[in-house]
Length: 310
Image (cartoon, rainbow, N blue to C red; front, side, top):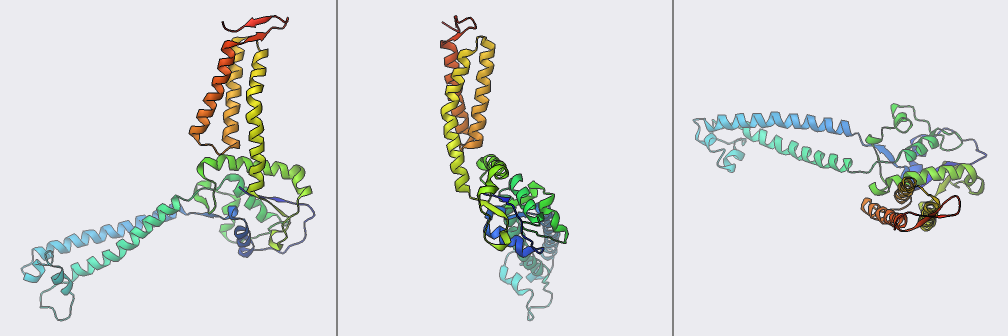
C-alpha cells in the first residue's frame, strides 16, 4: 500500500480540476478511487426488468391470440419459425399478424442489454473497497493548496470529502485479508511522516504532485516485515519472563490471555497471514505459555520459590 503526505515550504499553485486529480490517480494507482453507483445501477436493472416483464406478458397474450386464431398460418407460429418470421413480410398472405414477431425481436434486444447489465453490475460489486485512510489521503491532497489544490465545482466534489465507503471502489485495492494491514501501514506512514519523514524525504518532482511525498509499498512492507520478525522473537520470551515473576495463578492466566491477544493482533496487523494461519499460530503461542504456567515455578517476593504445578 502506498500513501501520500505533505512536505514543507509549499509553492503557489493555481487551482486544478479533473486533469490534476487524474494525473494523481494515474501516477499512484491506490488513489484511483471512484463511486460504484451501486444503488443507481440496481435501480436501472429494476427498470429494465419491469420493461421485460411487460414485454413477456404481451408476448404470452399474442401467442394465445395466434394459437386460437382461425387463420392457418397464425396457428402454426408456435410450431414453425419460418411461418412466424414470414409474418412480417410484405408478400405474406392476408390475415397474418406480425405482433408476436415484433415482440420477440424487441425482447431479444432488451434481454441482451439486461443480461449484460446484470454481469456488469456483478463485476462492479466484486471490485474491492478502498480503505478509509486512503480516501482521506485523497481528500487531503485535493483540498490542500500546497499539494493538489484541486477545486471541483459540481456535487461530485463531496465524493472523497464525505465518503460512503460501501459505494466507493478502488481500482488497485488491497486484498480482503490485507485490508486491515494496509490501513495500519497508512496510519503508520502518517505518523512517520509527521515526525521525521517530511524532513528527510524529498517531495515528488512532477508539478502536479508538488509537496507530495510518495512512500512506496515496498519500503513500508520491508519495515513492517522487520518489526514483525522482531516481535515474533520477543513476544514468547517476554511472555515467559513476565509469567515467571507472577505468583497468583489467576494473574498468570490473565497475563497469558493478554499476551495471546497481543500476539494475534500483531499477526493480523503486521503480516499477510490468513485467518486460519493467525488462528493456528495464536493457538501454538498460547499453548507454549500454558505449558510454561503448568510446569514451572514462580519467584515470590521473599525470594522463595512457589510451585505452580507438580
